[in-house]
Length: 262
Image (tube, rainbow, N blue to C red; front, side, top):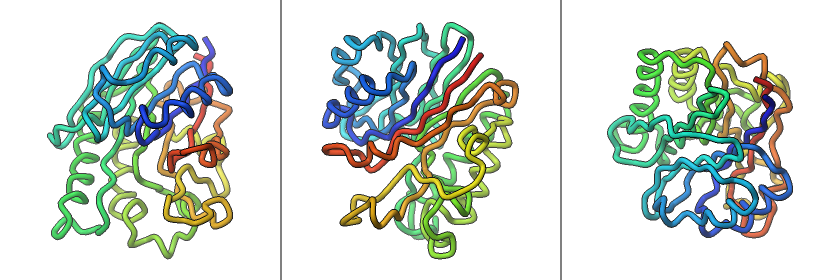
């Protein structure tokens, strides 16, 4: 079975329904994982998605904040969700495809502005969330699984526009990178994007604050596609759809794609 998966922090699925439909029409991934949906599940505009063949959905939502959803053309059943760090946030949902592959969709906390948990509660919550992810995957060793989402960390030097300038900026600090690496190791996860694109600057997020995001190109790779080592060799065709960052009323994130033959 061959299928394509995309992950996208949409920054409000209702506000940006038109560009979700544009992506589904033009790129037609078999599975689309959305983060920061900012909607209760029953308010997600599924009618248009279903009309394009995305008749399966699993989701967790809340009004105005967070929220994760997996849309699929392939038959899929819900495979659980976890509230890591007991935040009461809709940040994780899992679905299982008919071929037995489990997809975990995550929206890791952003962590606020200051990389110091003593003065910034949100940064502490981010680290605690990653620690509990790590421990959960240690206890529940994943197999035949894919993990995607806005993990809100750009781990490599070439995942940011300026490594030295961002070492003290939330999303690229050494302690966050260390926590993400421990989480990745705990599930034997392989970074599929970097498996396919091993070298060079690569971004999936550009701030709204930049007057001309494309020309400034001060990006970060915050959005990820991982797979367990037992299926990582089946992943290929990774890419970032950078053009989507320039669509009308865009998210500040661009979709990240990968294909699998499983």
